[in-house]
Image (cartoon, rainbow, N blue to C red; front, top):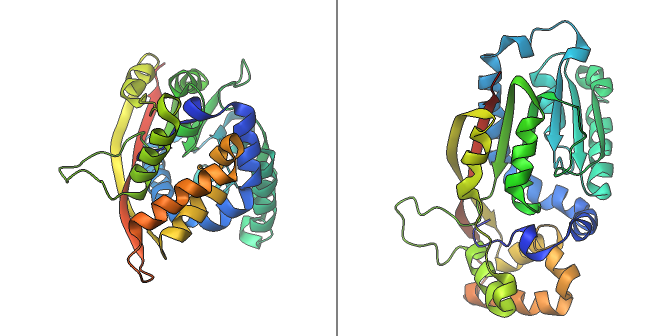
Length: 301
C-alpha cells in the first residue's frame, strides 16, 4: 500500500500467520468489500486471457485442470474461479489458519445454494506457504490478490510461482505497490496510507525504512513467462472518518502485525497522530483514490 511496510521489513512468517489469524473475521467484514473493485477487475481480466486458451476451459477430464489461489484469505475468489473454469480443481492456500477456517466456512455457505452445489467438491482450502510451494506440482492457473506485498522476499516468491505453472498456464498477480504512482497528480501527501508509512518510518528509524522491490518484478517473471498485461488499477476507498480507517487497518488489516511486534500502545499513539491529522472538528467521510498493480503472464512452452 502507499507507504505500507512490507513483511520483509517488519515481520516473520510466524508473525504474519498469527496476525492474519487474529484479524481474519474483521478483514472479511471490513476490508474485503472495500478491496472488491480491484479483485473483480483482476478476475474479469484474467477470464479474458483464459478465453484465449481454450484448452484450459474445454477439457472433459476434471483431473487435467487445476487452479492455485495463493494467499486466499477468507476465500472470496475461490468460487468465482471455480465457475470461470469448468471442471477445474481449485486449491486455496493461506499462511493463516484463521483465514483458512473462514474460507472453508465461506465455501460451505456459498455452495449450499443449489446453483453452486456442484462446486463444493471442486474447491479445497488448506494452510500453505506461498513462498514454499510443493515440488513437482504444476497448475494451469495461479491467482493471488493482495498477498504479494505482505510476504517475505516477494521477487523470489513470484519467480517460484511462475515455475509452478504448466506450459501455457496463466498467472495473475494483484498487489499494492510499495509506493503509490503519481499518475501526473501532485504527491499524495494526504493519502492516509502514505501518512501512516511516514509516521511508522519516523518512529522506527532505519528499521522502518520502506522496502522498494517491485521494479524487478517483471524481470523475474520474464525469465520463464511472457507478460500479457501490466497495468495500474485505480479505485476510490471511503471511510466514515479517520478513526474508522485506523481501526480497520490496525485491527482488521495489515497494520495489525505492528501491534504484535511493538504493542498496542505504540500503534495507538501513532494512530492518534494519524487521526489528529484528519481532524476537522466534525465527522466527515474520508475518501481517497488508491492504485493497485495487476500483472498477468503466460508460462512459455
